[in-house]
Image 1 (cartoon, rainbow, N blue to C red):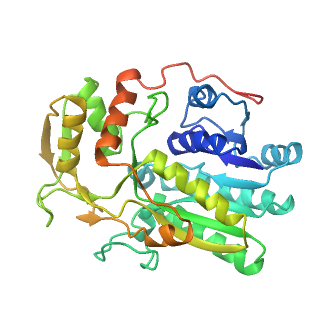
Image 2 (image 1 turned 30 degrees about the horizontal axis):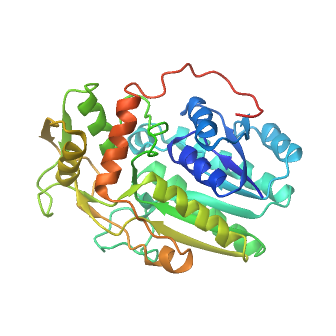
Image 3 (image 1 turned 120 degrees about the horizontal axis):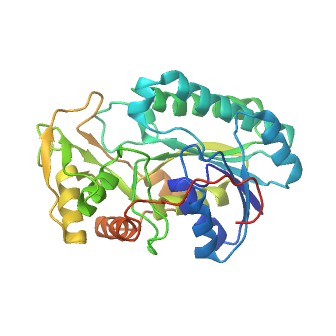
Length: 347
């Protein structure tokens, strides 16, 4: 069975490629490398000992996408490709709507043309917006507070409409909480461009000396220690959630959304202490202002994924921090190799 993985060179995509290959799937990776590095895919091949097709494709380019489908027998698609920085989406909303929505529309139209109707969509817990109902279930009202989240929300609506029009589709929508960690080898991990938007890569860059101090955005929330509480999930657990979703969409036509999280809320200060223990480093930090739109507490109810996908997160906070630190130690500057173009062929 051949799976097209869009955005497969990215953080979650590359880890999912490893797990797909380990599970015996053939994969084709489509990526334009605008926000990722081909080096990650070379390392996926190294870790798995398997070759796979890599195509440099912009999903907004219909000709490129249709050529990809006409040249390959594709059985299902896992769709990661998207811009994903919340702050940037607020600053440049049209960039996000154009890339995330237009690219997905071309992809779905091409899938329909080539009769490929099995789809796993990379959504996000940001679709829930600001809610005080914890833990968050999939029945929670949708309503994102930023353009990035709204692109995910709109695509979810698009998928619901596609399924209503043609119930032969099989669609799993995966709403991620806070992905962290890295492959245990330290060979692939999160390599953000510029200043990290997320806590753990920022922590690890402070620990390695790339950044001076961590800013904690607010310590006056109604939480256990005043700092924000989030549901952190190891990226390998998250990748395995896609394998389980892939198994589900092969069985029967359906559409459903699933939370992928641990169901446990961890505060920013708790994560700082856990990372200090894992790294043996003291993390200097100061308290800054709250960020607009941030909520005090956000964590998942993963019961539906457990029941319907037979998936459960297994990795601890310690493992998340240890694996992040191993990746950072081995790759202090991230994937520093030149971002060369990969047109196609084996990794």
